Length: 122
Image (cartoon, rainbow, N blue to C red; front, side):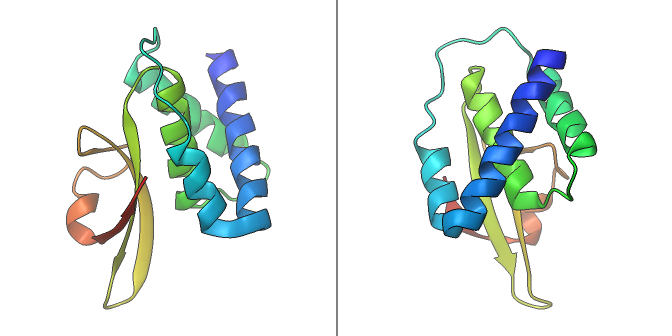
């Protein structure tokens, strides 16, 4: 588990730097270019717990876009075909990002996709 938390922490840092350097365009490019490996030995629950721990110990507040992108990258690196979804609602205006596996949210509320209109899927 320690190895996974360190890997998740490194992903959070990498994505923070990417978001500051070039914003959403670079972040989505990083996610799109991460292939899903053919097999993995860690369970979905274990990988999600690793992200939870990494976020809890990250020295800065982790926002949903950074967390969701890191979740997708970690899952794909371990054989889980995940997608990053970015959505918004009009009134009151809010945006949110979450990870999905087989069109089901992972690490977020199970009904999150009903609250936001999908804008982007990576």
